Length: 270
Image 1 (cartoon, one colour):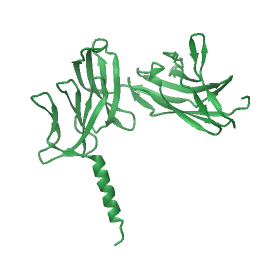
Image 2 (cartoon, one colour):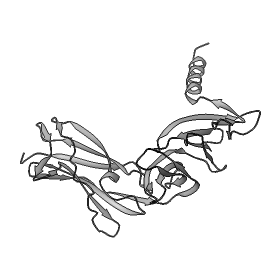
Image 3 (spheres, rainbow, N blue to C red):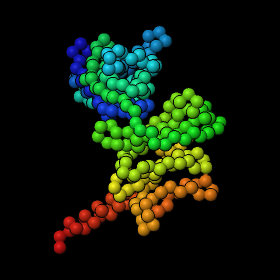
Image 4 (cartoon, rainbow, N blue to C red):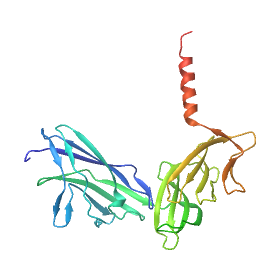
């Protein structure tokens, strides 16, 4: 092990994240030692000493303490082999608030430590375009609030759905739905089961109808185009259901198949 060579790299999914959005990174490890390596954690008293650790710092240089001491699962790394791990850094460090941060990964094999490159990211506020309290009876957090937020990460404007605990404003879930065009203001409303319905423009021709459940999870997405009866819009029914009216249902997967079929036909020799 004295001459073992291991390379470690860290790549963030994006350089900018919305407040409360999970900050995710991929750690890639390559074994250049010429022999198999076993990456595993060790116990020191009641605390697990993980083979994979991170250093997280705020823009001022202050180190952020880790919120828990969980250890990553063991891994075998054959000679010349490369493995990757996707990590939710928000579960390890308090990076949900606005600020600039830097981080790197470290792995320990016996008494050797191998360190990755440093990666930098920013956490910023978005623009709130809808907020609605609702009830979730018989759950740990029965009083909740939906939020629909738009956020530009410097390259793309996206629409997010978030669920907060109503009294404390604690974020329970924050998730990106997809990119959005803001030429038309998104619509949002709740159905009789307190699911969140959002209708928005994703490109100049396509509207997206997204349904988010009470836990902040994306339940379904449907696509529409403008029709003879007008522009798609959300409409509440007497039974509490929410439907899209004034548009034509569109299936992007079916259109892609038909477009590919048409291309293949056009390529046939005459």
